[in-house]
Length: 311
Image 1 (cartoon, rainbow, N blue to C red):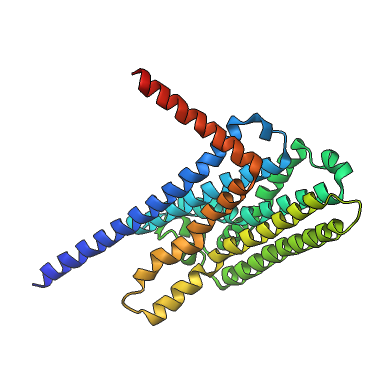
Image 2 (cartoon, rainbow, N blue to C red):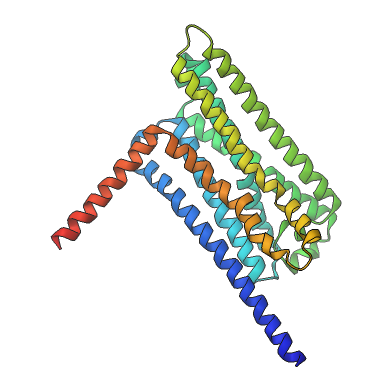
């Protein structure tokens, strides 16, 4: 009887892990498919290639797609493969950490570009060139990877090197377990969030001042204000991922036996959903991008209908 109960318990665990992985993969595929529409539109419309604003936007979309892919991969691995080689796990965690930090940094870069376009219109084409935009994207990746590299360096210093020969559950909570990592994580999150919020507040105030000048283009300034406010809303959505672990801990205390029912909704709302809403709101709101996307897919639909009629 005990063996039968253990068998049922194992089957329940496997089924629960399968359902959880299926839901994560399904949502991740849907979100990346929708974001892929924006990427496809960008690369099929050469008019966007020379505009720093759209280059930064598509970098934001691609970065979010990478984050969704690797976070879903980590979740599936954690459920299906409890012990994986630590070097491979650290590499995945490094990529997830970098893409997570890249999103607010890219939003800050987009806000600065709008500030230059409104407050320094005569110098915009000189300052915001395509070449400098790609340099900025390289800097964003360089700055975004710093927290993950710092975690790795602390791990190498504090732990013996033999730790890299063992298998482990691939989550940041199980790999980076020293008190130094906890303090470092708080400092890094606070530093990055503070810098990005300062940039957003500064650019918004400067655009607001420019909108009240008699010589300013009122409509462009108002649109820039709304755009920077949108970046603030996007940043708030992205910062939801900071409270994922907090909600898990609360659920563990309040729902001792049923805490797993909170894991999927919590992960979806705080990690996956912002990666869909952030590019979707911005891409659909921009008239030029939306019109190109609508025209492109209308043509594709027309070609399909013509081909099906001829057949």
